[in-house]
Image (cartoon, rainbow, N blue to C red; front, side):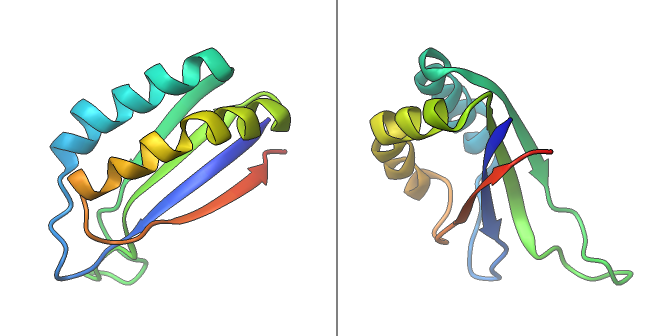
Amino acid sequence: MFKVTVLYPRAAEDDFNLAYYLDVHTPMLKELLNPWGLLKVDVEVGIAGVAPGSEPVYALICGIHFSDLQSLQTGMDAEGPTIISDISNFTSVTPVMQISRVE
């Protein structure tokens, strides 16, 4: 399995709109990527850092899973620009992205 991990760094000046992310962005992402072989989407909402009482490093982490690398790359090439253009509707931070093989 292959995965795109999208990490949204937590920033004091950012007002991450979780409702928009969950109600609009995630369903859109699923709709756009399902035809390209999307298996699942994981959403992790940061609640704390490792130290007691510390803030989370990331406001949100999303995992976008595909069975093979070709499907992931083809789907992201086709739909990535639309998905990325929606980011400004829920956050002002630039996400960090990584493609991984899940063992």
